[in-house]
Length: 235
Image 1 (cartoon, rainbow, N blue to C red):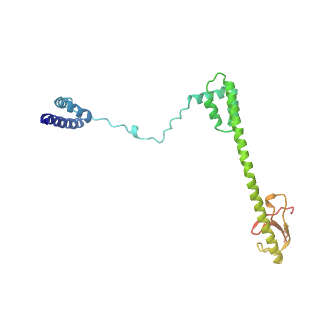
Image 2 (cartoon, helix red, strand yellow):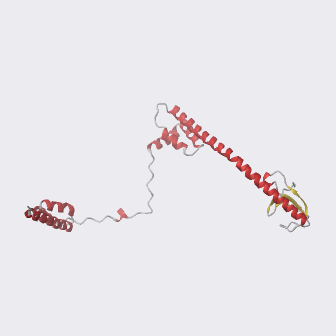
Image 3 (spheres, helix red, strand yellow):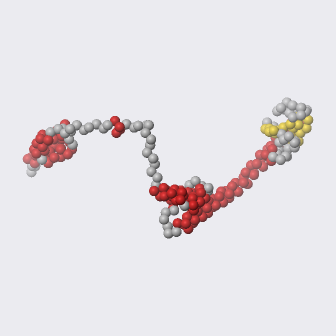
């Protein structure tokens, strides 16, 4: 059978809790805390709230607490104790300084590795030297790997340069045939050509150009619309 008395008691406790929370909020007190107190002790909670009265208004935060001063100097970054000790060792121990200089010439990051791992073994000098040798071996392996990759890429580079030279020679020969057919007049410059021949001089990148010597005394290396300065000593 439904217990109406218990229901009325529960509704009354909830109502008193809401009233107590409202009064606590108006009195600058925690509404959740006093709402719970009034729910458990309905009459006592309200009486206590009425007796203690209103709490003082919370003081506002000072302006400096929330305002950012852009003119202030930022706080210095804290240096890790082990890194500070490493800097001290470099300043006082010639072996540590020499080791740091030796690995830093390989890579700027290697000194950080050396400093992080140089932490208090039994014999620091032997351990330090082993770290240096390990880093040097690692660096040598990287250099060897890079050299192998460069060697692997060389055939393709040589093939590209050979193809470019063959195209330049074909353009130069076609241009010289055109000049001969045009009465020794260079179409690109409009000047009279006194002599012409394929160039094969000191600079390999200039090979394949036609060396043109004009009647006005000037000369140039030309391959169609591509040209460069001619050497002063000729082909």
